[in-house]
Amino acid sequence: MCGIVGVSGTSPVNQLLYDALQLLQHRGQDAAGIATANGRAFHMYKGNGLVRDVFRTRNMRSLPGMSGIAQVRYPTQGSATNSEEAQPFYVNAPFGIVLAHNGNLTNWEKLKEELFRVDRRHINTNSDSEVLLNVLAHELQLASGGLSLDPDAIFRAVAGVHRRVRGSYAVVAEISGYGLLGFRDPYGIRPLCFGINETDSGSEYMIASESVALEGNGFRLVRDVAPGEAIFVAHDGRFYSQKCAETPSLNPCIFEYVYLARPDSLIDGVSVYGARLRLGEYLADRVRESIPDGGIDVVMPIPDSSRPAALELARKLDLDYREGFIKNRYIGRTFIMPGQAVRRKSVRQKLNTVGVEFKGRNVLLVDDSIVRGTTIREIVQMARDAGARRVMVASAAPPVRYPNVYGIDMPTRAELIAHSRGDDEIRREIGADALIYQRVDDLKQAVRDCNPRLTNFEASCFDGEYITGDVTPAYLDRVERAREQPPAAADDGARSQLSLAIETAD
Image (cartoon, rainbow, N blue to C red; front, top):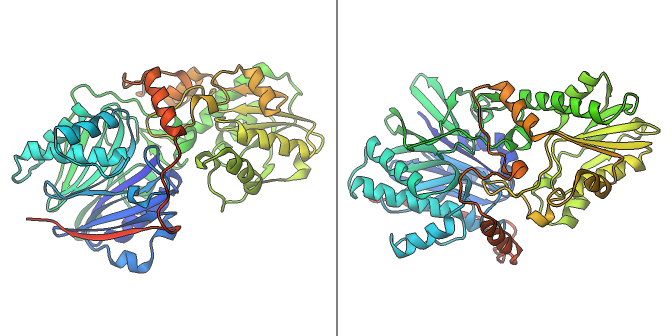
């Protein structure tokens, strides 16, 4: 999961890109980068860390131009410590291109070999995003014949990308001398939307992972980018769009609605907040079936993503709702923290109990999802230590039984607490008196209730169905073996950052 944004403006866009990254910070906390286009020159600055830590005033001044792209990252391919793998990526031929990507390519290793052996392109990192950039560059070379570009040639190149690349990808790219390009994979797995801002000097366009980045910067959300669609904003402000995939279908990642996206975002016509309220309604029915009347004294969310579901569950069951955990907002998300020991320690630093709300009570804790089980196990024990008589757990999502290969850094199958365990065994593992999971069908229906036009979802971590058709047990074995290899050495310095300015050829 990463957050991407591209802007074509009527005035310098460096501050707009920075502000949009701040609004997308929840989508990646490991690295951040901005690249701007000023005439035919690219200016780029990127490094490891939060947006506020990577960029200083001097860095922002070095990013002139009225068009550009940016990204916040946490890695699903490559290294979390190597700042060379922070995005955007750059390639100088043809034309000069910078690109940022959200998603994960399932055939990136095969493509990397093809690029070297057939296309004569060298890949410098282990990032699938650099592979994607070079595939796009090669297709632009073919579509243009090495000469000038027009929108039709750009859309032919994107169609070539769709034919070669498998997996999930939402992309923003800047083509030197031409303009801003955005496109989404034919399955529409990862989110991408665009908006417009009318100024006295003309129309400005923004493409972003979530609508909150647009609205927070004064842009009006126009719509989501359709699966397999590409949009192109030329430097003269003209806007073009075209379907570039032969048989696209919309299959949004359902985990966006459960946990990943901000609740104030609108993704594929669905209010994320509204979907989480509906999850609480369906979960209330499951709780009513599993726990008799009088078995619950109070409902408590585990901050923050589960709060809407917990509120609606308590309302529907006519139960008291209380905030029993206070969150330290200066500790990172435990979901994306490496290592069990670090994650376990972080839970105690991140949450503290309000003892009076637990003492002598039967407490139902509502979580958005349970992945490894480490976090919820610690929280259940914290509730007991605070004096709870019984501690029950309800998950707004179904059991996470399978790894995600489309851009969410899920652990290996062996690390997933639900992979080879039944519900009662999981309950004992986390130390709860009762455990209630959402049903997969109810999860899908809760999102569909908010937009009935959605018929399919990418829900592989819950149902084991990988929609791109190329994910096999052997593929998962290979991915897991790669995860077990020791990470590449970190760059020298805690914040090894890269700054460059590139003058592209005419």
